[in-house]
Length: 433
Image (cartoon, rainbow, N blue to C red):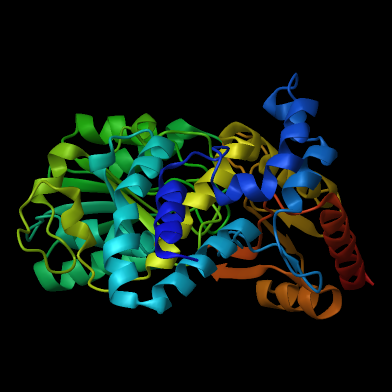
């Protein structure tokens, strides 16, 4: 590829929309996807969710293994083929002359990418920072907030462990008070959830930490109600959106929070090792960067991106993941994955000895669902599913949650879920005999 051609490719890939003429996405998928769109044009998202012909087209965009059934997309999701190809092309280019192509060519794609992420998030671009995962995003905020000894943070025992560890480090280092409430999920009463946070707060509470979709069992938390309550009591709100962004059809301002962090390699299916942080504009200046910055008190969101040499191919591959996501449509994607979750969950819940740990109501759940079998530990069930049936899940044995976590994605087929439900039935029956 000639130098001018490379520049042209990179510029077009960074700036174009999903179906614009020169995106890799259009080159790979337009011919097949556009007829599929026309076939469902008169259907709402709920109807499209059950249209297997439409989703068959989407499924062919992935290169997932035929040797295993992956139902642990809550950990990390595979990227579509076109996203993998983009990363490979950017990586090849980088290695032809790293210091030139990375810093003078690929780095110029960061601002267009910020614009695309901001559009997806529904926020101004100058409130979006690009990083590597939700842990980095949320830890930047947790360690960067000017909290002092005696200031209180209220979180939950069902939050993600890396965030809990960050608050405990601040408690040890700075003397803040980290308070945790505990929930017995599933809960189908938002007022009860809000009340639990409220009762844990005092006049010294400066921050409330909420996990939008609880990673263990997929409970959807009423973030907007919690944020409104916390703000009325003088506290700020930080949201862990690792499992909700790219899955739930929402915009970050809908949550009424002050800070938000997410991993893009989960339901957005961006390259593995990509993430995003959002900080409300008037909060940026007071947050210290996690790494060095020339002016740590700047109100420029880019002060959080001073990482030195980073993976430009991964970063720029995010753009094609957004193209793929937006071509499906946020509401269609949410409805489809919720449909897949309920498809298997409604079939196993009537099996003797099987218990669900997640609501089937769309107000309280979407993709992730926990399931257990009487007389089996989570690890034993996880191991049996893989060893006998080559079905990959993850065992959860934490606090008051004891189940396997099952998480389909848009590439998951009904045949995959039929195999899973059959396996659960066989394993449960074997425990009874």
